[in-house]
Image (cartoon, rainbow, N blue to C red; front, side):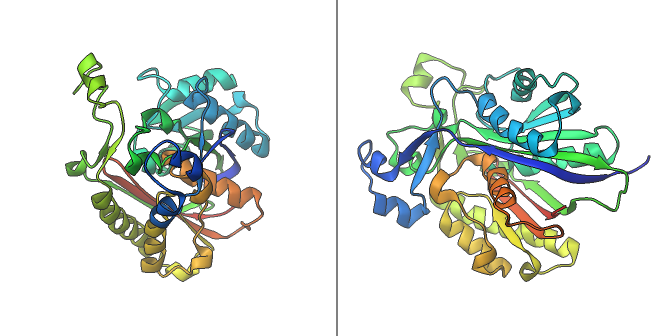
Length: 331
């Protein structure tokens, strides 16, 4: 079977208009701006309007990416959306994106890998393009995670925000010209209860009792997640660097999942990446789950902070537990 190369031709992102600051949260729960910043590094986050769906956020980001790639939606033959806040349990959210973009020639599916979802989606698209099953793919990380947040739980409501990031991957005829130099993915299902929405699925279907117990809301064991996140992200990123024969100081950018400043700093330090090469924007957006990495990449790309040949390592950790990393050579 012939092998093809893969390149990035466009990026985009979208965050909702409503800004929810730490001072706003002080009026809602027993917390403070100082407490939130000291423990998370977050100052504000974006919250989608009630009428906005996850696919609406995804489409806004996708249109930016398509414009930069100089593609019409009907030229796409694959759409993958990574999300844990779908429009509906089914059909998958990528189908709603297809409908709204009028990308009629696309195969569509969604990936549920929480905060690692965009890396999983990127590797799925990369594999399908390299083997010739797709030519032009739209991948999106999109979340309206505010709908799963318990706004009376001060330990979790301060962490999350809504948003979407998108990327266009396209086939090249030279298999040596592949934007992804190395990748790693993994999961450990023994920790499924550490970060979860317990209700609403087949295990605990919707019911009055489920709603009364608040099982429709996100639950997290923060301390355990913190420790596991650092180790998993370091190990995954280290595996990718080893595959590529590189050290952390070789990177132009380390782009970690934007969950917590202390996690990001710990990962950068253990990988030997200088602080000025570790990209962070979570103070403005909070944790947008699958959307964090593509939002970061779009800000770097459109901000003029990426040059052809730059090495960018993306790494994430999320509920599942899932993790993944990928080393990109920017086209």
